Amino acid sequence: MMRSEQPRRARGTRPLRRGLLAMLAALALSGCRMAPSIVLFGAAFPDWLFCMAGGVIATVVVHLVLSAKKRVALLEPLPLSYPGLTAIFAVLIWLLVFHH
Image 1 (cartoon, rainbow, N blue to C red):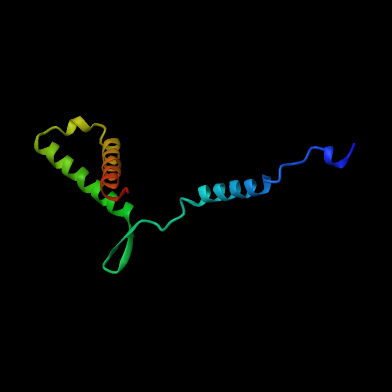
Image 2 (image 1 turned 90 degrees about the horizontal axis):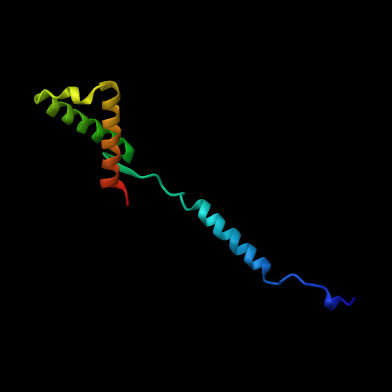
C-alpha cells in the first residue's frame, strides 16, 4: 500500500481545537469581573449590604403596618416569616436597583 493511499487526518483539526479551547476558556472566565460595590464616604461597600439593609427596613415597615391594623397574626410563625420577608425584600431590591 502506498503512502498516499493511507487515510490522513484533516489538516484543519488543530485550529479547530485551539478555537474550541479558546471558546471554553472564554466561557469559564466570563463571570470574572469586579465585584459590584458602591463607594460611600470614600469606602467601597458591596451592594448586597444595601439590599439587606433595605430588606430589614421594608420588613420593619410591614411589621408596623400590620401591628397598626392588629394583623400580625397573619405572619405566624414570626421567627420564620421575618427572615423570609427580609430575604424576599432584599432580593427584590437587588433585582430592581442593581441587576443589569
